Image (cartoon, rainbow, N blue to C red; front, side, top):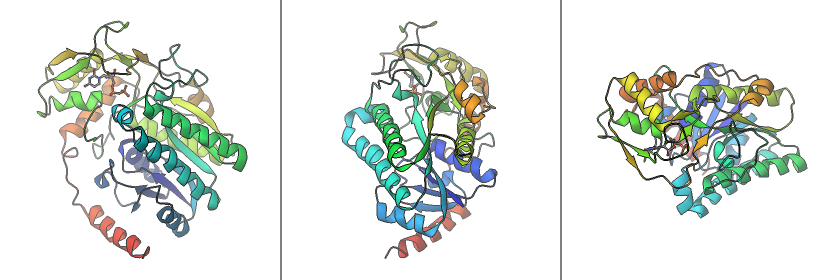
Length: 348
Ligand code: UDP
């Protein structure tokens, strides 16, 4: 049976798809390609569709025996979510409801869900544990928390089993350099820093240097995208073992300040990377560090790429290589076009 990955052409989705296929899992990807990239996938079966299009989604479930769903498809920009709450509720909350209902109709009862540290808001203690207060400070985090709660009540009423994975700061790239992080517009710290040695920007801005932290800049827990990918497989196996629904943090338990991240990028790239302090960004907590003990104990999660150096080295390999700017015109792209034509014609 196949694993359906929604949002599988996005940053964490595409790395998870690669991890799953490397393990021999059969994967079907759906993505509306609004923010995902077809070139981040290879020759998996792919459907370009929006999960709110339930007829199209139903068609995919009818075509393939689906064992479980890994659900990434969502809008995920904090700033944008504050300006467009309707779109965020529609795409994230309503989209998840559509997906869960198609799953119910097709007797698919396992889902691994892509959640976020933004569900906590300003933490009351560090490191953050799963049972801590959830009080999101932005629409994005609020929609993810609502999606988690929806799954909880679907479990209660319909027996849906879910694992929700609350990521801290996803970063890095596949160690091969084949796929990496690509957002448009880019808002994340590590890719923005690497645009400087890549001659795409002159300097990086530090959003505030008067936080109550060791050097005044915000502290985050950066976690390698391949460690996130492997956690999804651990979570799937946890569900396969018949375990109960639950929520897990995913981070390294190490906090690095913005200045420390820039310093490490200077070491890795050998470039001076000029930086300038600007005003704070709205809604940025001073410090976010995870306790991931629960994921290690209950899912058997073993992060392999814990060091910030490795995270930045792999990100740099991708950004400085041909991958980052590559236009998709590969064999897999042509195969995709053929598949798309077939799947579109079968809707008619
Ligand atoms: N940040 C920064 N300059 C930038 C982008 C981000 O100083 O150009 C800071 C941001 O304020 C936060 C940290 O870097 O403290 C990580 O931000 P990012 O957007 O990568 O992830 P977030 O923590 O918002 O999920």
